[in-house]
Structures are given as C-alpha cells and as structure tokens.
Length: 562
Image (cartoon, rainbow, N blue to C red; front, side, top):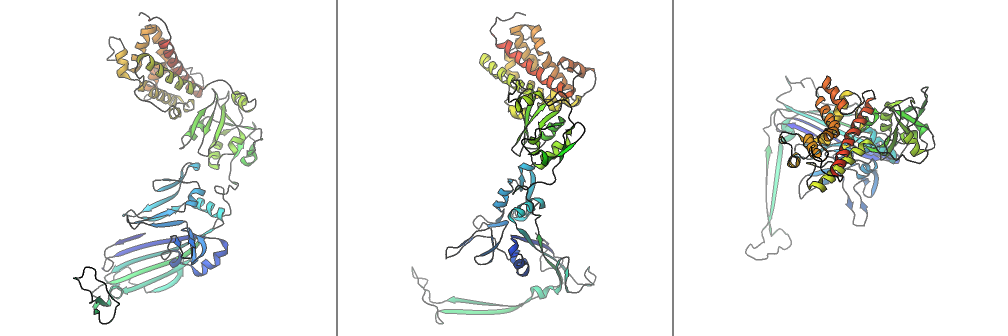
C-alpha cells in the first residue's frame, strides 16, 4: 500500500509505503529460507508467474523457486499481469479456495458451510488495482496444517517526509541510525533532497548515416565507424531545497500451523458442545453421540428452528404433520419431530454429525427430556412406517394452488396478480414463527401477504355482481363470487376465518385491545393452546377456508339464489 502527498522532490511531501510478501514452505526448507530469503526475495523482488524453459521443464505459477528449476515452496497469491487491457490482478491460489470450499462474492471469499463467513477479502486502490488480500488466521492455519506448510511473511515499511530544515521540525533531535527492533531491522536516513535527486547526468546519442530515405526498401549493412554518427552531452541537476527524513523497517516472520485441520483434512474438533440426554440433566459430549447406533434422542426448544432459519442457506422442509427437517449449508437434512410438549425431538447422531458451529446453535436450545419422543418421528425412524399426515403449511399452499388452477379453468382468469415460490414463502409461513401474541399477529400478516394481498382485484371485480363492488377489497370480492354459488350466509361462514386472519394483520400495528381478541376468535384460534399450536391452527384454518372456497366454487351444483 502506497500513500503519498505532494511531489517526492518538494518540501511538504509525505510518503508512506507498506509491503508484505508471502510464500509457504515445507519443514525441510525452513533453514534455507531463514538464512537466504528476505524482502527482496519474497517481497518486492519476487515474480509470481509461470515459466516454460527451452528444455521442456515447466514451472507452474504456484511454485516458489529458489533457483531455476528448484521449487522449494508454494505461492498462495498469484499476480496476473494484463498488458493488453491494462492493469494487473491478484488471484488467491485455487487450491486453497477449493480445499476450504470457498466461493467468491464481490471482493470477499466466503465459506457457505460456516454460515457464509468471510474467509478472505480483497482491497483495491483508487485505480482499481489490488493492494491487499487478507485471510482469517484460523482458516489459513487449517490449510497449512493439511499441507504441512509454514507461511513465511516478509514486511517492508517506509515512511518519508520532506521538511525545510531539521531545526524546528519533529526530527530536530534525530540522527541517522541502524538497529534491531521489534523482531526486525530499522534504519533512519537523513539527507539533503538535492543529494537524493540531484547530481550530474550524461547523455549519449548514436545514429546511422547509411540509409537512403528515397529507396523503397532500404537495407542497412553491418554497423561500423563510417556509417554511424554520435553526440554526447552532460550537465548538473540541482536546485532542490529541504531535508529528506526517511525511516525503513524490514521484518520476516513465520506463521505456524497447529497440526490440526478440521476443514480440509477432517480432523476431530476438540471444542464440540455437550448435550443434555437425561431428565436429571446428565450430559454427553457430542463426540460420544457421533455414532449412528447411539440409540438416543435429544430435546430442543422449538425456537431453534427460527434461529437456524435466520442463517443464510437454511431451509425448513415438512415430511408429515409433525415431522420435518432443517436443511443446512453443511448438506445435511436434520430430521425432527414435534412432541406433545411442543419440543423438537431429534435423533442424537443427526446432531452430532453436523458442523461445529451448527451444533453450538442446537446446543443453545437443548433442554432436558420433557414429553416423549415425537410419535410420528418414531414411526418413521424406528418402525419405518412414516405417518400419512400432512403439515398444515403444505396443505395451505396446496389448497391455494388448487384454487388457483380451478379458477383459471372455470373463469379463464388468473386468481392471483403474481406468482410466488411456495418453498421460499413457506420459510416465513410456519408455526414456528408464532412465539407470543405479537409474533402470532406477524404470522397472520405473512398469511395475508401470500393470499389476500395477491388476489387479482381487477378480474375479481369483473366477476363480482355486488352493487358496491368498486368499493370492495380482495377478500370481499372473492367472497361475493362464492356467494353466487352457495349463498351469502354460507360464503360469509367460509370466509370468517379469512376475515379474522386479515383483521389480525391489521392488529399487528396495535397488538392490544378487544379488536385483536375479536380477530383472533374470528380466525378460529383457541387461545388456551400454546403459541406454537395457535400458529399451527391459524395456518390450518386459513388453508381449510381456501380449500372449501375451491370445493364450493367448482363442485357441480345448481347456482344458489340469494
């Protein structure tokens, strides 16, 4: 990195340069590196580029060569010069990228398997060229351990300031020196600017005299004293005023691995959590549970689901009414079941095989066993007879799709103004988002967003025969269309829970008061249940209303007269 102010030859100039070169070496070359390689070899004088020798030997770009055809180390950052388009680019060694399973996002390299943590990042100067690549220490050490390499860093830091005179400046009491300090070598130089940039100069110019410019294709013969001319000049450059104060610091150091590579080599993690396995609070280490035949289940608060879904790349998937899975960036689908105490029960091995950071999230929600293992989970995992039930979340979206298709078939118009991705929307429309009354109301808001707010008001208004259809909202318009088939009273009965859900959405902004209570009752929710079950009931009731709307609209019967 090079920061400077003013012309380097003028008083007032300040320059600050920091450079760092690096290469990784195996243990057998450690002594050679320490004795013979420094800043000029690893840093500013080191060219990172491939080279093809005439005898057929090829030095790939990742090779650090001590002498020609003598590779002793590995370059972790490559320099790609781009002479045609201009500039240069630095490239992180692809072997490191692939070994740590990183992906590029903007100027960052992230690791999706660990919550998309930023592992390495690039910095650019004002011209858009690279000036720095940084990598987090723990990931670097993991990679170095897998390859049994040590990283050698070579630093150089220079600071320059041009002052009119030493007297009265911050450097008045200083004198030139050289010393060892802070594990490196420091040198202070104090010189007249004219001594640095001034002095004598000489120029010599030579040219040919035997070329006939009138010839169409002139050919020059061998050069000799008779067909050449020359001239020379010399002079003195000076006139520079002021003093140049320059400090330089060189340092070399090793970055050593810790002989442990959990990510690249798959070494055991010594910092895994413990989990409660018995009603008396007894705990077992994750390593003890990491056995497919462990025969134990673990209990967790349902809040673990929303905690995990808050991390990028995680998704909730349903299998039956009470079982599902959390699909994570580690590639695993953690099968869970909801028990009678509204706790999640999970086979212990399914937790112990997860990556460490995921296990710590699960551990934070781990509780002593309360209620039995989910019956539907046992049916699937022990009896190998999965329940033939369906989650209310999936039934809701299935009912909306059937109503949408039936509407298109019967009326020739789209029921919804825009489409949604069911799987994505289902991450927000879930019973697990209902933890208290405020979050229950927010869940109602999500339900309205995926159903009522998407209704195609323009075409519904064309199908409605209500006298005040221009004033009606989406729900009322659809209700009026249903009433043409089943009558006003029955349509109102079917839409009661849809209306209640909509009123709860409005109550999200003002979560207290009798209006909210009335809306919850209208939505058919039993408030004596836990909030998890209230959320489940809210989704169920809306899905049921949507299903009955389709059933009554599209079943074959005579039109009802109001």
